[in-house]
Length: 493
Image (cartoon, rainbow, N blue to C red; front, side, top):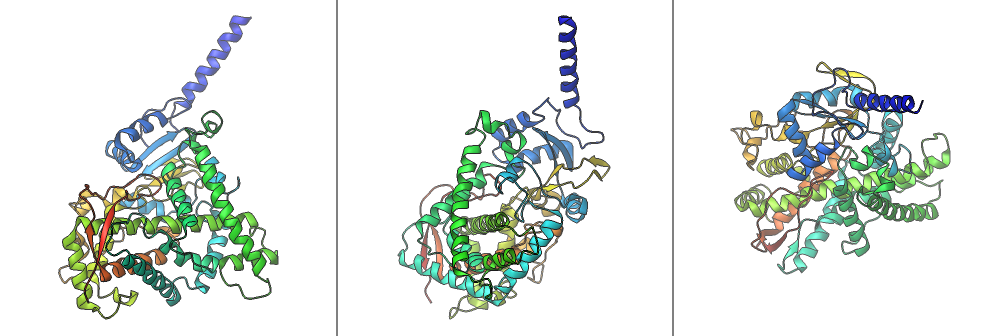
């Protein structure tokens, strides 16, 4: 009897193990699956060797083709590569979902909230509300440019007071960039020397380094939070979130005290509180307000600031390009005023440099993860419902068949023979595409252009030491420049 039970248990276990190693029917090709962990061990081994998540996927791309099927822990994850395949994902409603799972719910109180990792009708309503009210407080309008210009003037004044002393530039724009968005969200700005906020922003940067865009180890095997809370990153992420929640709760509570619901909203938080008070839409809750603020705050504090850090780094590495930009500004704008957004049409080389920077660096190399909303097909492969889809933007921006010399920093590739800007939208997608295209694109572009041109209008950027400098940064959800210092030498009028 005991032997029979033992044999039955072994048979069942063997069946479960063998079944767990089977790939779904017509699933995209990829490495062999192991029971329970899937391809997790293979992935971690290659990540340790290559150093970057997007390079692990690029290695798989070269071996298996434009669509690679993986299983990381319990999650089916597909990597999608190349301009045509990625555009197919961006334009198909089947792939408009966002990942669900432990990590994505951990940051929003165990629910699917916010606007970055929500989807369906909930996401559409919340996105529409957010954009509508951000626009009423200046988003995408002249007021937005004026707010950014105020921040550029304030930052330039601080830089001038440094008297050409070495300055760390990898995170120099954090607070200034955030202020433009925060003024529309919360009706206030932060002092650039606010030490508490600087620590908070450093925490956010650390958070973006802890996981990858698929949710990382914690999302793939959430039970690890019990057996390895530190190694899985659970304790660190929880601490970061608690600090963020505390900060945002203070801000929202101040608005509750100051705002009379009968008056005109002063900012997005006021408008949201007013919507909660009306009680005509159950999706407008205190938790959703916190989650929305968390999404906007973290996105606003990370991508644009990192882009500016890389922009300063590029100007040190390529001083001849820095000089060409300054010559163009002097010629097209003059020395008696700073460049404005209306000058973009004439500052063609400057625009080409910024486009080349965003292509070469690709701040979000794996984009923001998508999710298959239903069982569907992609170029003959069957994609199961709830599969996570990673759009490898890096593969598009570094495609040798289109860019020829993708590792070279060559702004002229965005200029035609007449010196006019030329862009192939299929092969240049720093802000993603489709319905899930970056909500803050216009703010990000305005910030990058105005901060970049104001710095180069006022200063020559020089090396502060002899350390080797490269455009490769820290890995994570987004790429971040490694610490570096510069000397900002005032230009003569």
